[in-house]
Image 1 (cartoon, rainbow, N blue to C red):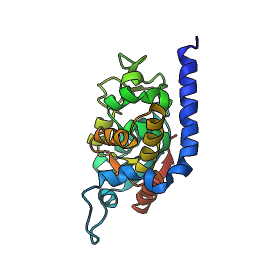
Image 2 (image 1 turned 60 degrees about the horizontal axis):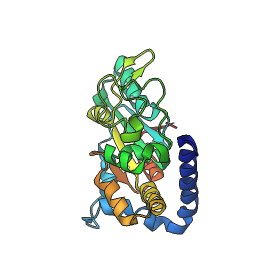
Image 3 (image 1 turned 90 degrees about the vertical axis):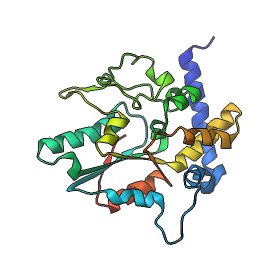
Length: 241
């Protein structure tokens, strides 16, 4: 009998193969269907698209955009906090900084609530189990099997060497003004492929994901589109893994 790790590896290999073949088959229109859904109310031809308008409140002396392409332990969420903490330590408070975090490619998993993680095995599918020694939650050994570890994080769940406990959960970052967006092209593609693997209706899977997106995380047409918009608004670029 194959052990659990072998089964996980085979599932992920199948998933990645589906992603590779699905990109060409789906086309851009299908890949961005999640963005279309999130903007279903439409907009006037004279008004700015909501995704574009979302960038308008970028302000302050220091502006940065973090590009997260895959689960990378705690770093996509730790670095925005470190940026704010070290700016505060050198005389620039949070309100004078702007931080944008773009979740794209396999990092899109962090845009969704616990139910989606548990039902669709996001920890396995997105290879998101390794959070490193800084993840100190009581359920650290099993957390990613049932929940998004950065959503509904408790005080003390994360501790950085030299800093101690730090509030790097999504709610805490949003409360500090960190703007987080998710690539709709990747959401459309990955939900399509995963639905096919599980024999589920693709539109239903996409809708369930979008219905359970974390409040305040902005869908954008693509991650690379968002990176361009952030830099147009004066953000320096940092690769977050």
